Amino acid sequence: MSVDHIYQLISIILYMVAMLFIGWYAFRRTVNLTDYMLGGRSLGPAVTALSAGAADMSGWLLMGLPGAIYAAGLVEAWIAIGLTIGAYLNWLFVAPRLRVYTQVSNDSITIPSYLENRLKDTSRILRIASGIIILIFFTFYVSSGMVAGGVFFESSFGLPYHTGLIIVSIVVIAYTLFGGFLAVSYTDFVQGLIMFLALILVPVFGIFLTGGFSETAESIRAVDPTRLSLIQGASFIGVISAAAWGLGYFGQPHIIVRFMAIKSVKETKEARRIGISWMALSLIGAIATALIGIAYFQQNPDVTITDPEAVFIELGQIIFHPFIAGIMLAAILAAVMSTISSQLIVTSSALIEDLYKAVIKVDATDKRYVFLGRMSVLFVSVVAMLFAWTKTNTILKLVSFAWAGFGASFGPIIILSLYWRKITNKGALAGMVVGAITVIIWGNVEALTGTLYEIVPGFLLNLIVTVLVSLMTYKEDKEITEEFDETLRLLKKERA
Image 1 (cartoon, rainbow, N blue to C red):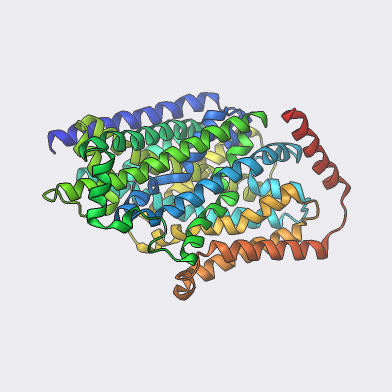
Image 2: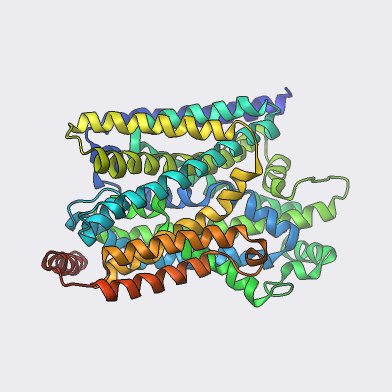
């Protein structure tokens, strides 16, 4: 191992030790099941905002997006535009109401339990179906993150894939298992800061390497003038498909659960400002990194890059001292680990709160449920590791439509449950199933996937089916009406 690699490895080790320390700190603050699953609804606006952002973006922000821009130009930025708009609307319309409604409706601490309590589904089918969807999709989702961690150590330090997989898995499992939601949120906050700083520093220092803005632009035009255009090479359907990624935000359990955990409605406004600022600047930094990469490698033809998705890593190692470059690498690891941990805690809550308690119906102490929650984190992690042990395209392909799956399954239901009095449990269940099935079928038929992103038909069909079935099955429920009115009253009071 070279001296440069040793410096970088020291940075990675320091980062991992810091994550474990945060996990230990959160462990000492975790007393009951609400603490473990929802942090006792005590998160401040900054932690809520950055943890939601870090849980959302994953390695796509530092590798996927820069790689796409580097290879094809600004036309690939429509996904970033769609995500920013979707995230803003999610913070604006979902966050305040979900925070209040989940507390009014029997102090719900998971999305499935909220849907059951909000719609008074005594059959528990809605809750169980929601829990199963979360459990299945997130188990594979977690395994894909573990694959990314193994590949990271393999490509960055030459370690065997399985060694990297085990290192990442052990650290994430440790702080998630013991510290629960608080550990996940605090580590995500730190990881969000690392990602943000890395995406700002690389383009800021990189622009000096390429001679400033005008020379950078000229070098990009020398490679391909269309690289600086948002519309050249884009089709109308292509733009719609890319921008439609923003629809996914309304139904991502690991993101909207943060809205339920913030201290108060008042703080959602500040959290929105922090979160969208972080997101916009990070996305701009990722795009700028790719553009500077195009210019730098055009100006230095003797320096080659084999993988477009490695443009952030390559520039970081060229610009900075190996120790600082190691922090850049830690930013990628942070992006991967923050998403894994967020998905683990939501999967754990689905397994215990929404399946175990709903199906088995065993009365137990909070201490017992916290223990079961930790064991479910371990169980899901082991299963995910088994899936990740062999690098297969099947897992990685599932992730490509998992975002659409959650968005189309839960998104319309969440919005309607917060804003429409007449949504029913039968309507929600029918819409959720239709949305999920549409995404699965559409996402696996190449002729359909190549025309339109599967979240669009899945989301729209869910919305239509939920409304139609709800209108056919609606009967006024006094308790539902009272809770809806109480939510509006508390919203008005807190905002005043």
